[in-house]
Amino acid sequence: MKRFFCVTLVTAMVVQSSGSNATESPTACREFEGVRLVVDVGMMRSEVPSLTQEDLTEVLIGVAQQHASKAVQFRQGLSAAVLECAAARKIALLRIDGVALACQRVGAAPAPVKREARVDFIVRRLSDQTLQAVLHGKAAAPSGAGEDTGLCRDLIQAASSSAIAAFDEPGATW
Image (cartoon, rainbow, N blue to C red; front, side):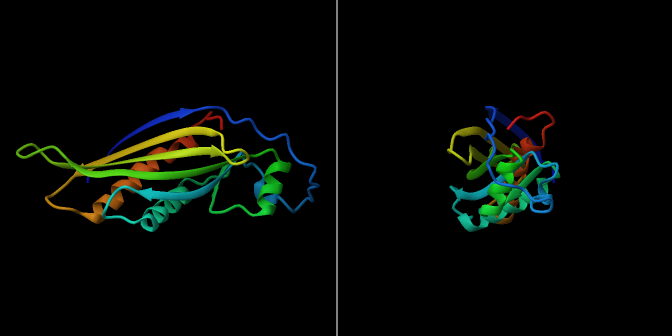
């Protein structure tokens, strides 16, 4: 299956918090050594009739886990301990929510018909909900006739992965 990806990234720099007065024990925040960004994974809405919000939120969580690294952590829900450690280490805290905009057939017979999925993500600074970025993802694959929910889910996953890859970009400032 051939897939084509296109990602557009519009971003503004994150102004990191000035820290907190929390005292940090040597072992309390050990899991945050080397971390520069913590992303709270929110929900993903669906404008695709064949997929539910729950299906797409599951896709978003899976894609986020695939892109987690030593420097960028994706979490679903942030505890008070995580918030305290992030503030003590001056780690940027962001939230990502998404929407699956489309999974539709493109082209007409006799030309090859393909199915294309588009997703958008809104990235906000957690502290004050300031918009930090709008990420766009797109994926396409050859398609047969009729609705193919499995292909749509796979394409939305690929489109989401291409958009979330922006967190992996070297030199990205969040």
